[in-house]
Amino acid sequence: MDRERSVTVGEAHVRYSQWWDVYFGVVAVAVATAILINDSHALWRRLLATGVIAVMMILHAVVGRRFVRRDAEAVSLAIVQILLFAVAAAAIPFATWLLFAMIPMIFQLTDIKKAIPLVVVVNLVTPAIDLVISPESLPGDLMIALISAAAGIWLGFWIIRVIEQNVERGQLIAELEASRAEVARLSHEAGVAAERARLAGEIHDTLAQGFTSIITLLQAADPALRDERLALAVRTAKENLAESRALVAALTPAALTEGSLPDAVRRQAARFAEETGTPATVRVTGDERALPTKVEVVLLRAAQEALTNVRRHAGAREAAVLLAYAPASVRLVVRDDGRGFDPAAADGFGLNGMRARADQVSGVLTVRSDPDTGTTIELEVPA
Image (cartoon, rainbow, N blue to C red; front, side, top):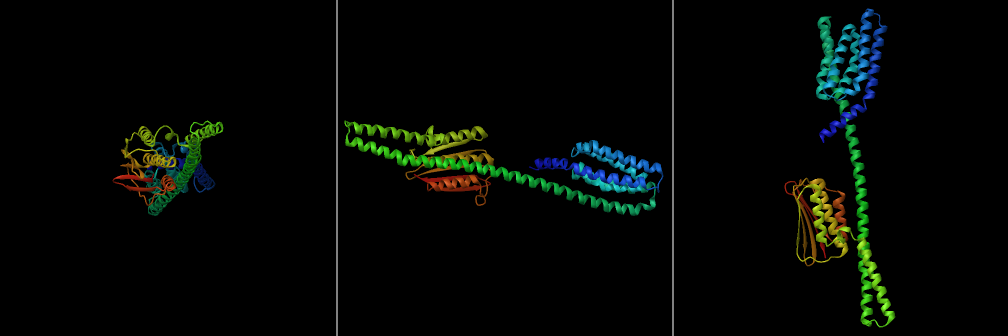
Protein backbone atom coordinates (compact mmCIF):
# COMPACT_ATOMS: atom_id res chain seq x y z
CA MET A 1 0.00 0.00 0.00
CA ASP A 2 2.86 2.44 0.84
CA ARG A 3 4.54 1.67 -2.47
CA GLU A 4 1.30 2.23 -4.35
CA ARG A 5 0.78 5.52 -2.55
CA SER A 6 4.36 6.69 -3.29
CA VAL A 7 3.88 5.97 -6.97
CA THR A 8 0.59 7.85 -6.96
CA VAL A 9 2.15 10.81 -5.12
CA GLY A 10 4.92 10.85 -7.72
CA GLU A 11 2.31 10.96 -10.46
CA ALA A 12 0.62 13.83 -8.64
CA HIS A 13 3.91 15.77 -8.61
CA VAL A 14 4.20 15.27 -12.35
CA ARG A 15 0.59 16.37 -12.82
CA TYR A 16 1.19 19.58 -10.85
CA SER A 17 4.53 20.28 -12.57
CA GLN A 18 3.06 22.74 -15.07
CA TRP A 19 2.12 25.12 -12.28
CA TRP A 20 5.57 24.92 -10.69
CA ASP A 21 7.11 25.46 -14.13
CA VAL A 22 5.12 28.65 -14.51
CA TYR A 23 6.13 29.78 -11.02
CA PHE A 24 9.81 29.06 -11.70
CA GLY A 25 9.64 30.97 -14.99
CA VAL A 26 7.93 34.00 -13.44
CA VAL A 27 10.49 34.30 -10.60
CA ALA A 28 13.44 33.77 -12.96
CA VAL A 29 12.21 36.38 -15.46
CA ALA A 30 11.55 38.87 -12.66
CA VAL A 31 15.04 38.42 -11.18
CA ALA A 32 16.74 38.59 -14.61
CA THR A 33 14.82 41.74 -15.52
CA ALA A 34 15.75 43.41 -12.24
CA ILE A 35 19.41 42.53 -12.80
CA LEU A 36 19.42 43.98 -16.31
CA ILE A 37 17.83 47.30 -15.42
CA ASN A 38 20.03 47.83 -12.37
CA ASP A 39 23.23 49.59 -13.58
CA SER A 40 25.08 49.44 -10.27
CA HIS A 41 27.17 46.52 -11.59
CA ALA A 42 29.28 46.15 -14.69
CA LEU A 43 27.45 45.25 -17.85
CA TRP A 44 29.37 42.02 -18.36
CA ARG A 45 28.37 40.86 -14.86
CA ARG A 46 24.72 41.61 -15.55
CA LEU A 47 24.86 39.85 -18.91
CA LEU A 48 26.59 36.84 -17.34
CA ALA A 49 23.99 36.57 -14.55
CA THR A 50 21.02 36.94 -16.90
CA GLY A 51 22.59 34.51 -19.37
CA VAL A 52 23.02 31.90 -16.63
CA ILE A 53 19.43 32.43 -15.47
CA ALA A 54 18.28 31.96 -19.09
CA VAL A 55 20.20 28.67 -19.24
CA MET A 56 18.53 27.59 -15.98
CA MET A 57 15.11 28.38 -17.42
CA ILE A 58 15.81 26.48 -20.65
CA LEU A 59 17.20 23.51 -18.72
CA HIS A 60 14.17 23.43 -16.47
CA ALA A 61 11.74 23.75 -19.39
CA VAL A 62 13.43 21.09 -21.54
CA VAL A 63 14.26 18.33 -19.05
CA GLY A 64 12.85 19.44 -15.70
CA ARG A 65 9.43 17.79 -15.92
CA ARG A 66 10.84 14.57 -17.41
CA PHE A 67 13.16 14.12 -14.41
CA VAL A 68 10.53 14.67 -11.70
CA ARG A 69 10.83 11.84 -9.11
CA ARG A 70 13.44 9.96 -11.15
CA ASP A 71 16.01 9.71 -8.35
CA ALA A 72 19.51 9.94 -9.86
CA GLU A 73 18.47 12.08 -12.83
CA ALA A 74 16.48 14.44 -10.62
CA VAL A 75 19.33 14.87 -8.13
CA SER A 76 21.82 15.44 -10.97
CA LEU A 77 19.59 18.11 -12.49
CA ALA A 78 19.16 19.80 -9.10
CA ILE A 79 22.95 19.87 -8.58
CA VAL A 80 23.51 21.40 -12.03
CA GLN A 81 20.88 24.05 -11.29
CA ILE A 82 22.53 24.81 -7.93
CA LEU A 83 25.91 25.28 -9.66
CA LEU A 84 24.37 27.63 -12.23
CA PHE A 85 22.66 29.51 -9.41
CA ALA A 86 26.04 29.87 -7.69
CA VAL A 87 27.56 31.38 -10.86
CA ALA A 88 24.69 33.89 -11.17
CA ALA A 89 24.88 34.82 -7.48
CA ALA A 90 28.65 35.26 -7.68
CA ALA A 91 28.24 37.58 -10.65
CA ILE A 92 25.34 39.58 -9.21
CA PRO A 93 24.40 39.10 -5.50
CA PHE A 94 20.82 40.12 -6.29
CA ALA A 95 20.47 36.74 -8.07
CA THR A 96 20.13 35.11 -4.63
CA TRP A 97 16.44 36.03 -4.90
CA LEU A 98 16.26 33.00 -7.17
CA LEU A 99 16.08 30.96 -3.97
CA PHE A 100 12.32 31.58 -4.07
CA ALA A 101 12.27 29.46 -7.24
CA MET A 102 15.11 27.05 -6.44
CA ILE A 103 13.69 25.60 -3.21
CA PRO A 104 10.26 24.64 -4.62
CA MET A 105 11.99 23.26 -7.72
CA ILE A 106 14.14 20.95 -5.58
CA PHE A 107 11.11 19.61 -3.70
CA GLN A 108 9.34 19.19 -7.03
CA LEU A 109 12.18 17.15 -8.52
CA THR A 110 12.95 14.68 -5.76
CA ASP A 111 11.62 13.14 -2.56
CA ILE A 112 11.90 14.72 0.88
CA LYS A 113 14.98 12.74 2.01
CA LYS A 114 17.06 13.94 -0.93
CA ALA A 115 15.50 17.40 -1.06
CA ILE A 116 16.48 18.44 2.49
CA PRO A 117 20.30 18.29 1.99
CA LEU A 118 19.96 19.93 -1.44
CA VAL A 119 17.96 22.79 0.09
CA VAL A 120 20.64 23.26 2.76
CA VAL A 121 23.34 23.31 0.08
CA VAL A 122 21.57 25.87 -2.13
CA ASN A 123 21.07 28.15 0.88
CA LEU A 124 24.78 27.91 1.74
CA VAL A 125 25.79 29.16 -1.73
CA THR A 126 25.69 32.81 -0.66
CA PRO A 127 27.78 32.31 2.54
CA ALA A 128 30.27 30.29 0.47
CA ILE A 129 30.57 33.18 -2.02
CA ASP A 130 31.06 35.57 0.91
CA LEU A 131 34.09 33.57 2.05
CA VAL A 132 35.81 34.45 -1.23
CA ILE A 133 34.38 37.82 -2.22
CA SER A 134 33.15 39.66 0.92
CA PRO A 135 33.99 37.97 4.24
CA GLU A 136 32.50 40.89 6.16
CA SER A 137 29.02 39.87 4.92
CA LEU A 138 29.42 36.26 6.01
CA PRO A 139 27.76 36.41 9.50
CA GLY A 140 24.61 38.16 8.27
CA ASP A 141 24.27 36.05 5.13
CA LEU A 142 24.88 32.85 7.11
CA MET A 143 22.08 33.73 9.52
CA ILE A 144 19.78 34.50 6.59
CA ALA A 145 20.78 31.21 4.94
CA LEU A 146 19.92 29.20 8.06
CA ILE A 147 16.52 30.90 8.37
CA SER A 148 15.86 30.45 4.65
CA ALA A 149 16.82 26.75 4.79
CA ALA A 150 14.55 26.11 7.77
CA ALA A 151 11.65 27.97 6.17
CA GLY A 152 12.24 26.20 2.85
CA ILE A 153 12.26 22.75 4.44
CA TRP A 154 9.08 23.54 6.37
CA LEU A 155 7.44 24.82 3.17
CA GLY A 156 8.51 21.65 1.34
CA PHE A 157 7.03 19.43 4.04
CA TRP A 158 3.79 21.39 3.88
CA ILE A 159 3.53 21.24 0.08
CA ILE A 160 4.23 17.51 -0.02
CA ARG A 161 1.73 16.84 2.75
CA VAL A 162 -0.95 18.80 0.87
CA ILE A 163 -0.27 16.73 -2.26
CA GLU A 164 -0.37 13.48 -0.26
CA GLN A 165 -3.68 14.47 1.33
CA ASN A 166 -5.14 15.23 -2.09
CA VAL A 167 -3.95 11.85 -3.36
CA GLU A 168 -5.35 10.04 -0.32
CA ARG A 169 -8.66 11.87 -0.71
CA GLY A 170 -8.80 10.87 -4.36
CA GLN A 171 -8.07 7.23 -3.48
CA LEU A 172 -10.79 7.23 -0.82
CA ILE A 173 -13.29 8.66 -3.30
CA ALA A 174 -12.34 6.04 -5.88
CA GLU A 175 -12.62 3.25 -3.29
CA LEU A 176 -15.99 4.61 -2.15
CA GLU A 177 -17.30 4.70 -5.70
CA ALA A 178 -16.04 1.15 -6.32
CA SER A 179 -17.66 -0.03 -3.07
CA ARG A 180 -20.95 1.62 -3.99
CA ALA A 181 -20.87 -0.05 -7.40
CA GLU A 182 -20.12 -3.42 -5.81
CA VAL A 183 -22.88 -2.99 -3.22
CA ALA A 184 -25.33 -2.04 -5.97
CA ARG A 185 -24.34 -5.08 -8.02
CA LEU A 186 -24.57 -7.45 -5.05
CA SER A 187 -27.84 -5.90 -3.95
CA HIS A 188 -29.30 -6.38 -7.41
CA GLU A 189 -28.08 -9.97 -7.60
CA ALA A 190 -29.35 -10.73 -4.12
CA GLY A 191 -32.72 -9.17 -4.88
CA VAL A 192 -33.07 -11.13 -8.11
CA ALA A 193 -32.03 -14.37 -6.39
CA ALA A 194 -34.38 -13.77 -3.47
CA GLU A 195 -37.30 -13.02 -5.78
CA ARG A 196 -36.58 -16.07 -7.92
CA ALA A 197 -36.42 -18.24 -4.81
CA ARG A 198 -39.62 -16.72 -3.47
CA LEU A 199 -41.47 -17.31 -6.72
CA ALA A 200 -40.15 -20.86 -6.96
CA GLY A 201 -41.29 -21.55 -3.41
CA GLU A 202 -44.70 -20.01 -4.03
CA ILE A 203 -45.24 -22.04 -7.20
CA HIS A 204 -44.03 -25.21 -5.50
CA ASP A 205 -46.17 -24.71 -2.41
CA THR A 206 -49.36 -23.58 -4.19
CA LEU A 207 -49.77 -24.43 -7.85
CA ALA A 208 -47.72 -27.62 -7.92
CA GLN A 209 -49.29 -29.00 -4.76
CA GLY A 210 -52.73 -27.89 -5.91
CA PHE A 211 -52.43 -29.75 -9.22
CA THR A 212 -51.14 -32.81 -7.37
CA SER A 213 -54.18 -32.70 -5.07
CA ILE A 214 -56.54 -32.36 -8.06
CA ILE A 215 -55.00 -35.36 -9.78
CA THR A 216 -55.20 -37.42 -6.58
CA LEU A 217 -58.87 -36.53 -5.97
CA LEU A 218 -59.92 -37.23 -9.57
CA GLN A 219 -58.15 -40.58 -9.63
CA ALA A 220 -59.73 -41.47 -6.30
CA ALA A 221 -63.17 -40.74 -7.73
CA ASP A 222 -62.55 -42.80 -10.89
CA PRO A 223 -59.39 -44.92 -10.63
CA ALA A 224 -59.77 -46.31 -14.16
CA LEU A 225 -60.66 -42.87 -15.57
CA ARG A 226 -63.48 -44.30 -17.63
CA ASP A 227 -65.20 -40.94 -17.68
CA GLU A 228 -63.61 -39.03 -20.56
CA ARG A 229 -64.18 -35.69 -18.85
CA LEU A 230 -62.34 -36.87 -15.71
CA ALA A 231 -59.58 -38.32 -17.87
CA LEU A 232 -59.26 -35.00 -19.70
CA ALA A 233 -59.18 -33.13 -16.38
CA VAL A 234 -56.41 -35.42 -15.09
CA ARG A 235 -54.36 -34.98 -18.26
CA THR A 236 -54.79 -31.22 -18.07
CA ALA A 237 -53.80 -31.16 -14.40
CA LYS A 238 -50.74 -33.34 -15.13
CA GLU A 239 -49.67 -31.04 -17.96
CA ASN A 240 -50.02 -27.99 -15.75
CA LEU A 241 -48.20 -29.79 -12.92
CA ALA A 242 -45.33 -30.45 -15.34
CA GLU A 243 -45.36 -26.78 -16.35
CA SER A 244 -45.28 -25.61 -12.74
CA ARG A 245 -42.38 -27.96 -11.98
CA ALA A 246 -40.53 -26.62 -15.01
CA LEU A 247 -41.08 -23.08 -13.70
CA VAL A 248 -39.74 -24.10 -10.29
CA ALA A 249 -36.69 -25.66 -11.93
CA ALA A 250 -36.10 -22.54 -14.04
CA LEU A 251 -36.35 -20.25 -11.01
CA THR A 252 -34.12 -22.42 -8.84
CA PRO A 253 -30.39 -21.51 -8.80
CA ALA A 254 -28.51 -23.44 -11.47
CA ALA A 255 -26.27 -25.06 -8.88
CA LEU A 256 -29.31 -26.74 -7.29
CA THR A 257 -30.80 -27.93 -10.57
CA GLU A 258 -27.71 -30.05 -11.24
CA GLY A 259 -27.96 -32.10 -8.04
CA SER A 260 -28.66 -32.01 -4.35
CA LEU A 261 -27.69 -29.27 -1.92
CA PRO A 262 -24.57 -31.15 -0.69
CA ASP A 263 -23.47 -31.62 -4.31
CA ALA A 264 -23.93 -27.90 -4.97
CA VAL A 265 -21.91 -26.99 -1.85
CA ARG A 266 -19.14 -29.39 -2.89
CA ARG A 267 -18.97 -27.76 -6.31
CA GLN A 268 -18.71 -24.32 -4.71
CA ALA A 269 -15.86 -25.50 -2.47
CA ALA A 270 -14.08 -27.13 -5.41
CA ARG A 271 -14.38 -23.94 -7.45
CA PHE A 272 -13.09 -21.90 -4.48
CA ALA A 273 -10.05 -24.20 -4.15
CA GLU A 274 -9.39 -24.08 -7.90
CA GLU A 275 -9.57 -20.27 -8.07
CA THR A 276 -7.57 -19.50 -4.92
CA GLY A 277 -5.27 -22.49 -4.47
CA THR A 278 -6.54 -22.74 -0.87
CA PRO A 279 -7.74 -26.22 0.16
CA ALA A 280 -11.44 -26.38 1.04
CA THR A 281 -13.00 -29.53 2.49
CA VAL A 282 -16.70 -30.36 2.67
CA ARG A 283 -18.22 -32.71 5.25
CA VAL A 284 -21.88 -33.77 5.38
CA THR A 285 -23.35 -35.33 8.52
CA GLY A 286 -26.78 -36.68 9.39
CA ASP A 287 -29.43 -38.10 7.10
CA GLU A 288 -29.49 -36.12 3.88
CA ARG A 289 -32.99 -35.22 2.75
CA ALA A 290 -34.79 -32.91 0.36
CA LEU A 291 -35.49 -29.46 1.75
CA PRO A 292 -37.89 -26.70 0.67
CA THR A 293 -36.45 -24.79 -2.27
CA LYS A 294 -36.17 -21.50 -0.38
CA VAL A 295 -34.24 -23.19 2.45
CA GLU A 296 -31.79 -24.79 0.02
CA VAL A 297 -31.31 -21.45 -1.73
CA VAL A 298 -30.54 -19.68 1.55
CA LEU A 299 -28.02 -22.34 2.62
CA LEU A 300 -26.31 -22.39 -0.78
CA ARG A 301 -26.08 -18.60 -0.97
CA ALA A 302 -24.67 -18.48 2.56
CA ALA A 303 -21.97 -20.99 1.60
CA GLN A 304 -21.14 -19.00 -1.53
CA GLU A 305 -20.93 -15.69 0.33
CA ALA A 306 -18.85 -17.14 3.19
CA LEU A 307 -16.33 -18.64 0.74
CA THR A 308 -16.25 -15.35 -1.17
CA ASN A 309 -15.39 -13.50 2.05
CA VAL A 310 -12.60 -16.00 2.74
CA ARG A 311 -11.19 -15.40 -0.73
CA ARG A 312 -11.37 -11.60 -0.50
CA HIS A 313 -10.43 -10.85 3.07
CA ALA A 314 -9.15 -13.77 5.13
CA GLY A 315 -5.80 -14.67 3.57
CA ALA A 316 -6.46 -18.19 4.86
CA ARG A 317 -4.33 -21.30 4.39
CA GLU A 318 -7.36 -23.59 4.38
CA ALA A 319 -11.14 -23.57 4.70
CA ALA A 320 -13.72 -26.15 5.77
CA VAL A 321 -17.45 -26.46 5.17
CA LEU A 322 -19.85 -28.54 7.27
CA LEU A 323 -23.42 -29.33 6.28
CA ALA A 324 -25.15 -31.03 9.22
CA TYR A 325 -28.65 -32.52 8.91
CA ALA A 326 -30.58 -32.81 12.18
CA PRO A 327 -34.17 -34.03 12.64
CA ALA A 328 -35.57 -30.51 12.99
CA SER A 329 -32.93 -28.30 11.38
CA VAL A 330 -30.00 -28.05 8.99
CA ARG A 331 -26.76 -26.34 9.99
CA LEU A 332 -24.14 -24.85 7.65
CA VAL A 333 -20.71 -24.02 9.10
CA VAL A 334 -17.85 -22.39 7.15
CA ARG A 335 -14.50 -22.09 8.93
CA ASP A 336 -11.16 -20.60 7.88
CA ASP A 337 -7.80 -20.01 9.59
CA GLY A 338 -7.30 -16.50 8.19
CA ARG A 339 -6.64 -13.16 9.80
CA GLY A 340 -10.11 -12.71 11.28
CA PHE A 341 -11.97 -9.48 12.01
CA ASP A 342 -14.17 -7.80 14.60
CA PRO A 343 -17.73 -9.11 14.05
CA ALA A 344 -19.18 -6.27 16.12
CA ALA A 345 -17.63 -3.67 13.81
CA ALA A 346 -18.30 -5.52 10.56
CA ASP A 347 -21.04 -3.95 8.48
CA GLY A 348 -20.36 -5.38 5.05
CA PHE A 349 -23.07 -6.17 2.56
CA GLY A 350 -22.14 -9.87 2.51
CA LEU A 351 -22.87 -10.48 6.18
CA ASN A 352 -25.96 -8.27 6.08
CA GLY A 353 -27.19 -10.20 3.06
CA MET A 354 -26.71 -13.52 4.86
CA ARG A 355 -28.59 -12.22 7.90
CA ALA A 356 -31.45 -11.02 5.69
CA ARG A 357 -31.69 -14.39 3.94
CA ALA A 358 -31.55 -16.21 7.28
CA ASP A 359 -34.47 -14.13 8.52
CA GLN A 360 -36.50 -15.15 5.47
CA VAL A 361 -36.44 -18.80 6.60
CA SER A 362 -36.39 -18.13 10.37
CA GLY A 363 -32.73 -19.10 10.53
CA VAL A 364 -30.04 -17.96 12.96
CA LEU A 365 -26.68 -16.64 11.71
CA THR A 366 -23.73 -16.69 14.10
CA VAL A 367 -20.34 -15.13 13.33
CA ARG A 368 -17.24 -15.81 15.43
CA SER A 369 -13.87 -14.38 14.50
CA ASP A 370 -10.48 -13.98 16.11
CA PRO A 371 -7.10 -12.92 14.65
CA ASP A 372 -5.46 -16.06 16.07
CA THR A 373 -8.02 -18.70 15.13
CA GLY A 374 -9.73 -17.28 12.02
CA THR A 375 -13.43 -16.99 11.33
CA THR A 376 -16.43 -19.29 11.75
CA ILE A 377 -19.78 -18.52 10.12
CA GLU A 378 -22.67 -20.73 11.20
CA LEU A 379 -26.19 -20.70 9.82
CA GLU A 380 -28.88 -22.91 11.37
CA VAL A 381 -32.22 -23.18 9.61
CA PRO A 382 -35.28 -25.06 10.87
CA ALA A 383 -36.31 -27.66 8.29
